[in-house]
Length: 250
Image (tube, rainbow, N blue to C red; front, side, top):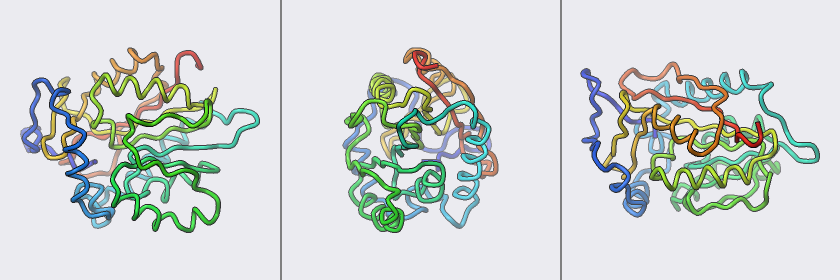
């Protein structure tokens, strides 16, 4: 979620813990936390809902970033422009943006109440044939239903629920699911230094930009573009967009 804030001294306010971060992540605790959160835009965005600049700025920032990448990815011959939305929440990103740049979108979200609301939010798009599969499973359990299926894999505000080893395994599965000239977009908060920080509230971690880049190298992904989200409250931790392609497909 974007609602990771800093104090005036640039210290995170979520009682973050820096030691043994990956060992502290507990998937069941995360599901329990999010299952108690209202299935609304304000809920999934950690209190930075439609009364703030965040939802609109987020979509504008993503759209601007993708326009810059227009010549860097394409749809494989004989396939459709198929996207998948990881950590989809109530379907906000697909509803407000992804359906506009994809012919069809799959969504993945493990929280039952969010999935129920997602089906309501996306009813019209479903009737229009724009919505494919909805996977109500954790992202670490996802396996692409077919190789080279997706032209765009979009993962926003959910990577922090995976320890580094699980994140690398997920990156490997993304390679299998990505079309030959497809693109992976990761959009997440970063810490303000080189350390990852654990958030005991939702049992996730916020990665440093340094660690993200290290993991991309370890996973054999090429970082082709990156940018910082603009137009959001200053108290939020930096939100960074990464555009990636597998080295074996660059």
